[in-house]
Image (cartoon, rainbow, N blue to C red; front, side, top):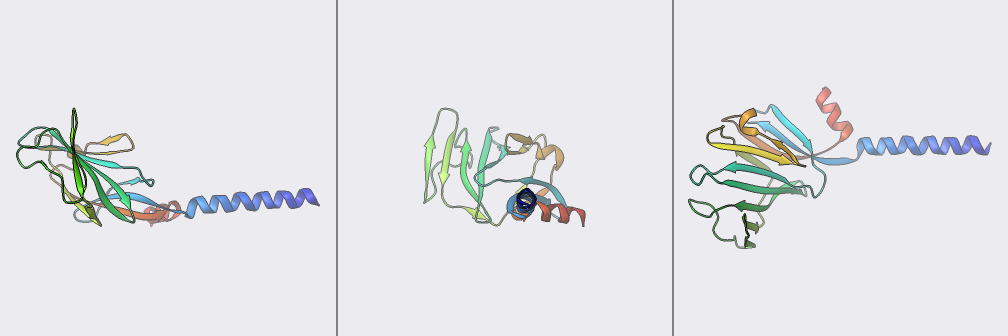
Length: 167
């Protein structure tokens, strides 16, 4: 009698755990083309930054914007540049700081946040835009040259995400 009861409790526990894993909401970075077609969707655990990198057309140096999702909004955490000529940041915004370093100069803070980012992608000559998330580098300029991408943070469960892809 006691063994049967323990087995039932264990089964209920595991079923509840699986149900929880399938339905707990988490954030996804959803990237779609300007007309709405989904281009990419990546899981985005809390606190995990993503980086948008491009090559500045005049300076020919990389520029990186580091973003994080908080409260359903995309917040710019830092922008890094190798020089500060030709329209690149040279001083900190009102609530930010300018941090000079050996390889990069960083502008951190400022409080910029977005519901959605409208991001223009160049090509292999101009821009060479990349998305870096969790160590994976996605060459946006090869996949979507000359496109406008809309980048949003969406909160959805694994099961919800799976169902939305099926239907």
